[in-house]
Image (cartoon, rainbow, N blue to C red; front, side, top):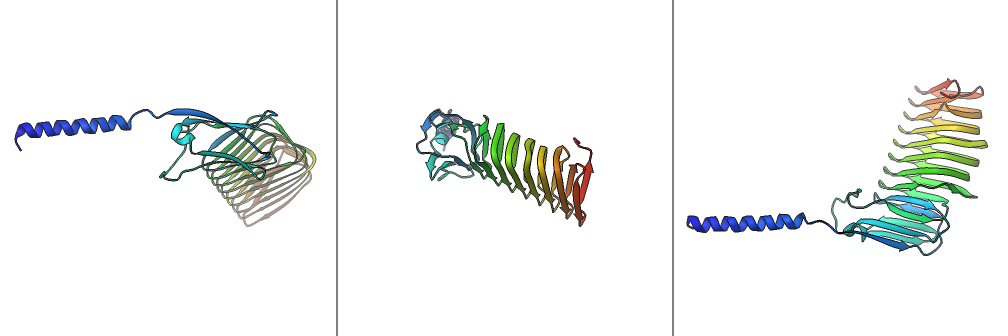
Amino acid sequence: MNTKKLLLLLVAMTMVFSLTALAAKAPATVTSKTVKLSGKFDKIAVSSGLEVDYTVNHSAPEAVISGLKEYVDRVEVKVSGGTLYVGFDNSGMRNVRINDKELDKIIINGPALSKADASSGAEIDIVSSMETDGGLSVNISSGAEFDMKGALKCRSLIINASSGAEADIRSAVVTDKTHIDVSSGSDCSVDFLDMKHGALIINASSGAEADVKGMAGSAVLNASSAAEIKAGKLSAGTITANASSAASIKCSGRNVQKSESTLGSVKIVKEGR
């Protein structure tokens, strides 16, 4: 092959590669769609790393999904058996990691919830206040998050967090009981709990952390396996604190019964610290 032909071949190959690169960099289509939610529900389950902003209101329930069309079309939102399921169909895709470049937060409005489940890095944010005659049960795992940004009022509050999950309750008025279970590096924070006559139970294990402020009729705090419970700003009529296996508990009050074993520590501080 002479020099001229070689140069022509190189130019042609360069043009092909350039066109291929331009095609690869072509802007993806951005779209938005609204899904009307048919069927009654009072529970929500979110998975696959999706993020949901949920607003409680009395209008017709719907979900607004925005982002790159390829991803928007794969979001699955459906009501079944009283639960609103929000998931992602990743069939045919490899190493999918959804972030705000592919999908915006999914905006949902609907009724007050009795149960919220999130797994596999998903996130549920309740961006409005929420009041229910019954209880609220929150179950989060595998790096998922639940954030109650508005005021919560309910009869009972149950939170189960595991495997690095995080729950945050900004303000809660609970008339009966609050039960918090955190494990395996998970974290739960209740910034203000108003439960003057109710019972609070916290179980923390395996490096998990619980932080509760406010008031309760009584409190039972159990920490084990390097877990930590911060309750120095909790006012309760009676407190039972049990720490074992290098776990620690900080609490306040005059009526505290404590138990320490295997390097566990219970520290009683002045109220408010």
